Image 1: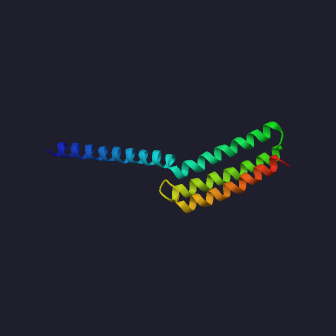
Image 2: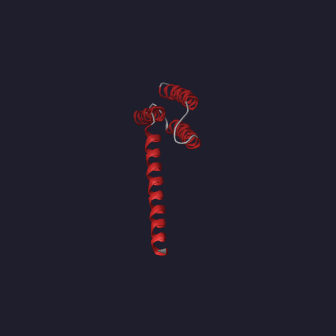
Image 3: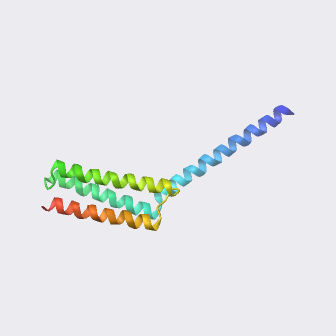
Length: 115
């Protein structure tokens, strides 16, 4: 009887662990695909492309590109911290703030590539 009880308890613990890991995986999938976060990520990718093109065609020096990349990394880090602190997604306010900072960086990219 005692062995059967231990076996049932072990099964319940394993099932609970499986449910938790599946729900965490689902939450991770959801947070990466959340529309507000996806919009920020797409914007970052486009700006990365603009920096790479500027470096490739000579309109950006390596120092300018490095400085822009550093700012882009800081924005990605900020986004990750905010997402982590907010349960896997961005609030509307956080999205607005990130977009504002991306706008500023976009203007810097334009200025550096056209100067």
